[in-house]
Every structure is written in structure tokens, then in C-alpha cells.
Length: 304
Length: 317
Image 1 (spheres, rainbow over the protein chains, first blue to last red):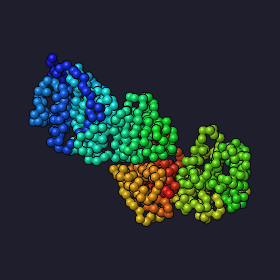
Image 2 (cartoon, rainbow over the protein chains, first blue to last red):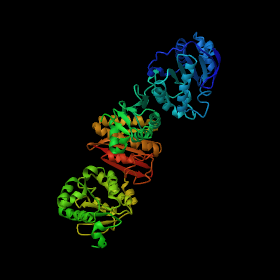
Image 3 (cartoon, chains in turn purple, orange):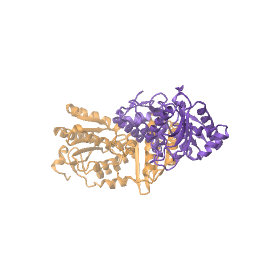
Image 4 (cartoon, each protein chain N blue to C red):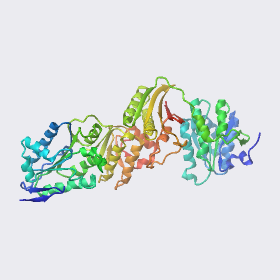
């Protein structure tokens, strides 16, 4: 069965049913959302080919969302590696588009809209008979002055629980060190539970989803310099749809008063209204709660 | 002796704002003057706070006998070790919702024999700020001064108190000076440290500055729980430099007389001398907590606000 299909990303393709859908043996969510760090075209092509080849072999639908790369170059790199990308595009199994044409085409980047798009895209792939969906996104637009780009970290923190825990989706986020600063790469790559390629170093404050239950881990040190990171973490916590969310602070050496206030405000504004459950709170957080005990109703230290 | 009004003889009846210095040279004069003030306030059913050094607390409790259960007692040598945190405590007491709209009476003894000159200097600033913080309010604050204190300290008490007296009577202070002027006079140059570690910082260096401050304090032998306070205070001060002090600042750290000192200097201005002297709203969205936190955590905060910038010296033992 063939036919022109306008998909959830607004791009058109010829859809092909590759056979009866078989529920896939789902890889754990942590392994299906990975950051990929590279610094030259050879590394880029190697990661691209491994990912696309795997998707084609497993009968999955594949989307590539380019930013800095010409979509034709993506197809050419795959072809050069012996992958029949042209045929895959023709039958609708592979699509190569740009972020600007798709999820950034509206008013800018909106994590909530993006999360809804993933649900729609996985549903569409399933309807078309694919065994799953995998996607590559070039994330270099996050370094530019695009409306909503400041919410990229919030998005990366949310999708582990709001997308990958729920859907048979595998996605690699491409971080090109030539196009993003070391600080940006380290921070954004650090928000993934699986990483490929070498980060340049640890960010001042690393934030990542918790592996097993809704919440975040924070490691490093907070201050005025990390206010945007803490704000992104707070936004992610605020949006988590579960009643209980946890903060694992085992790796957090120091937290400042403004960051505690930001996190406590996020807890208060959560729909469930339940306090953040904090594990391994650093001494500075306990000291701040001594000074501002009112905040204890929003930040519950579990192992005092 | 020129006496103030009759009301001045009975400090519990002053209104709206009464801030006398009581000079005493013996325990008898102390319990006489302070005891009269407290009993007068209790007679008028005013909430009473007595914040004096520990040994004086015992003396007053003994003499006030059955009345002392209605008084809030605070050991000033502990709670007010850093003079910069005393005013916050006094305002919190005066504003306590449980007091309704009753005027309150406070005994506050911020300077005692044994205070260092640097502490006494900041306590003098605190005394001047009381006049700004409580201006127009129905509050009586009696400040006992031991006449064994240094002459300079006693002279400053005449400048910072609108009323002075002894266990017998009070009179208007002829030396009373505008609080802003007293604060400006307190902004004298600080002695230069020896062997200070110097770190220049901007926003991009804040994390490294925190880490270096923590490592330095560990090497200097500051216990872990005090290092937490040290780092919180320095973190607030350096953040303030970046936010309000021209975007950059300088941190110096050194050991002195069994304590560690951090000095944060920048190009900022202290537009309101009462900054950090009132407990901030924990829910305030705009911050404004930094200086108050420093005062709560440090043993002494020296402030020097000059035309060329702001200097904060944080002491921790």
C-alpha cells in the first residue's frame, strides 16, 4: 500500500507499509535518548550511518532534522556509506528535513508542542506499520537567537519521562562542537542519560533526568552564574505530570539561596502541589532551610 | 543636669520612638536602670525583649523575679555576636503578629567589655540604624553602656542615641547626630591584610571563585559546618558584585587572630544603609536576601561604603 502522506512534521512523503507491525522488544528509555558529540564531518557521518542503518534494518521509520547540514548532504553521506538512502526516502521510511521547516517553523521552539509532536509521530509510524520511530536532530540552532531556544535544556530534561518512558522512540541529539560553545555542549549533553562522543568537561552545574522515577539529579555548584540552568530545571520539574518528583543532590556541592527559591517556587506551582522530595541534600541546602524554614513545605529533605 | 520631660523619666511611657543610652558603672546601677525600664514596660503590658550578654541576663532575671516569665530573653553575645544581625532580630520582635498593635519595649546591649574595636565600630553603625529603622514607630529601645568601655565607644553612644541617661534620669543627647552621617563616619579605611589570597572575578568566574574559596577555607582549617556558612556568605557577596557592583569584583582571603576573613570589593553603592538589616520575605521573587544571609552566617560583617565602591569583610572563626 502506497500513497502520499503528509506527516505530523508537515513534510510530505510516499508512505510504504513495510509489513505487519510487530511490537518491538523495547530498549530501556535511558539508552534510546542519547547525545552525540562530534567535532568533524567524519565523526558526524559515522554516527549518522550507524543510526540510520540500524533503523532501516529493524523496520523503523527514521527522521533526520538538519540545522546546519544541507539535507542533500545527509542523503549523500548515507549513499557513500553503501546505504540505499534514496530508496528509503522514496518509500517514506527515511525523511530528511530541516528544523526550520518543521518544528521551528512556527513561533519558535516550544517544548510542550514538541512533546506532543513526538507522540503524534510515533503514532503515525505505528499506523504506517513501522516497528518504531527513530530520529536524529541537529541541535546547533540552540546556540542561536531563536525564540524558545532558551528552553532547550528544559526540553531535554523533560523528554526522558514524558516521551522516551512512554514511546518506542529512539533519538540521537547531534551536538556539533564547531557550532556550540563548550559550555553549551557540556550542559546539554549532560542532560542525557546516554552520551556518545566526548564532552570537553563537566558543566558547573549538571542537570539530568533520574533514571528510574520522575525527577532530576543536580551535580556541581549553583550560583548567580547558573541561574538559567536552575530555571530550566525548575521548569522541567514544574511540568512533570506525576504527583511525586525527586531531586537527587548527591553530587551537588553547593546550592545558593536564589536557586533554592527557584526550585521551591517550582514545587509550589506544580499542579499536584506536592513538595519536591530531596535526597542527599548538601549542607548548604539544610543551612538555608534553617534560615528560611517556610521553604520546607515545598522542599522536603528525605534523609535529614 | 538638664532633664528631659517627665515622660523621659518613665521610659515605658515614651511615644512614639524612644531610644535612650543608659550609662552604668556598677551592677546596682545596671539592674536599677534596666529593671525600672522593664518593669515600667510590663506595667503597661508591652511585649518586652531583653537582649543582653549572658551574665547580665542572669542578673536581670534574678532581680525581676516573678516578672521575668513575661519577657523574651536573648543572649546578645550569641545572637548578636555579629552586630549586623541584631537589628533584624529587633524588628522581627517588634513586628511579631502575636503582639498585635501593642508598642514594644526592648533592652539591647550591643557593646560590652571584650568586644573587639571592629565589632564595636559595626555595633555603633547598628545603633545609628536603629533610629532609621524604627523612626516614627511606637517602640522603646534601651541600650545599656558600661562606663568601662572605651571613651570613643561612649562618645559614639551620645551620637547614636537621641536620649542619654543613667539609673536616675534621662535627658536629650546634645551629641545626637543624623544616622546617615554616623554611618558615613563609620566608613573609615580598613587596615590592609598581610598575605591575602587575591581572586578577581566576573560572572564567568563565579563557580571557580566558589571552589577556590572552599578549598582555601579547608586549607585554613575552617571546620566543615563553618565552611558551609563561609561558602554561602561568599557566594552571596560575589553574586552581588556581579549583579549590582559593576559586573566584577575582587575577593581577598586571609587568616587573622584565630579567624578567617574574606573581603569582597566592587564598584557598587550601598544606596540604602538598612540593606540586609531586616529578614527578607522568603517568597520574594526579586531576591534581596544576600546581605541579610551574610549577617546571619558570619561572626562579623564589616561594611565600608565609599564613593569608589563597596567593601564587605566577612569574619568567621
